[in-house]
Amino acid sequence: MFNAYGKRAADRCRALGKPPYSESSEYLFRAYLSNEYKQSQHAVAQWMNQAGMTTHIDPAGNLVGRYAGRTKNDPILIIGSHLDTVRNGGCFDGNLGIMLGIEVIDYFNRQQKRFPFAIDVIAFGDEEGSRFPMAMLTSKSVAGVLNTLPQGLKDKKGISIEQAFKDFGLDYRNIQKARYYSENVIGYLEAHIEQGPVLESEGLPLGIVTGIAAQYRFQILINGQAGHSGTTSMNLRKDAMAGAAEIIYLSEQYVKEAEQEGVVITTGQITVTPGAPNVIAEQVVFSVDLRAPTDEKRNEFAEQFEQIVEKICQKRCLDHEFLIQHDLSASLCDKNLMSLLEQAIQHLKLPVRYLTSGAGHDAMILSHLAPTAMLFIQSPNGISHSPKETVRYEDVTAALQTMIHFIELKEDNI
Ligand SMILES: [Zn+2]
Image 1 (tube, protein in one colour):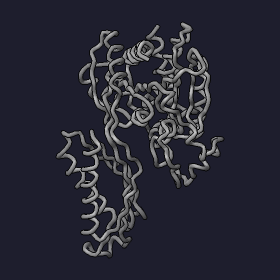
Image 2: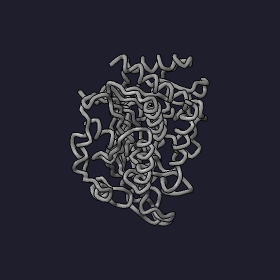
Image 3: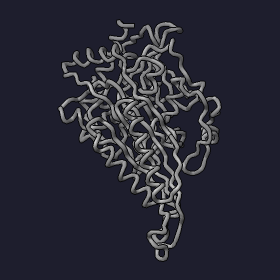
Image 4: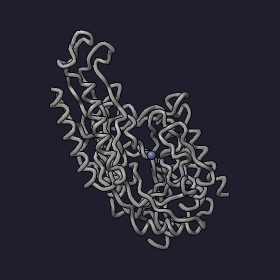
């Protein structure tokens, strides 16, 4: 029986990997508040209803399924993960955690089992920053940490977030109303693919996450001067592209020396203006994603990075601007909930493995609201954010059984 549930969870992720749930049949992309996103919400809401949940769209555009407790005023246990994807992403990232939440509820509902707490399965809308240059907007809304309304957010087509909300049938000004209150929430559980090679290398299906790395995401804008590539002599140039390249290279070198300390830096996005082969670049905008196990380490490297940018820009007579797009502190999972996960894994006679997450997840935001636990599922070949991302059915089934037992244990530990 568990095998069939596990298989269905994985198969549903695959089904959501294609149109109308993806922007294209060639690749998977589902952006927050897009049409594909809306279509996916419809499909997932149906599955939630079939599993015995009532559903609604919250003011942040998240899909919420509720499995009622024994009484109306019961506290809430949240199970969640994200429905949006990166461009050309894999279908299990985020989505699997939602599908597993639905299977958990289906299992309990079939037995007409109710708990002294309600269970909300939340399909978060924006974890990846899939549409607007700001990630985890929707879990921030739910966790109540969105103190001010981010202004001026626009998607790549120039559509403002206010307009996107309107087109979706919501009002952006109400986004903070999606919040839950700490006194009502007893915990948050998220299952997610590992997105790395550790579990596979040790032949393990599951891992318990101890915490999530601190992150910064910057956008750096370098301004130089356009000029003819044939007539402007090399030492008179203000070449924004060469400056950006030097910054990226030097910061990589600097961080590489510290890699054993778990610090990683990445530039995955770059835009060059005017962007012609025979014109010196006038402006370059590039992303920098910096992660470290602790806030102190992250801040230390961010400072070093800023110094590199200043030094190179001064040397090359370039101007620059920094924009912090994403600032997340390291977060720790809850000791009690981790021990419940440990007992649930031992119950399956599987080895217990603890690991830190280098990737950010909604769980790190939710840790501001409630005690948090996270379960990692093996990623074959360690691949994620790629169409090659996959899972093994037996691992998904083991995750499902762990989550079910976790909730049964939580009932005794409330
Ligand atoms: Zn994810």
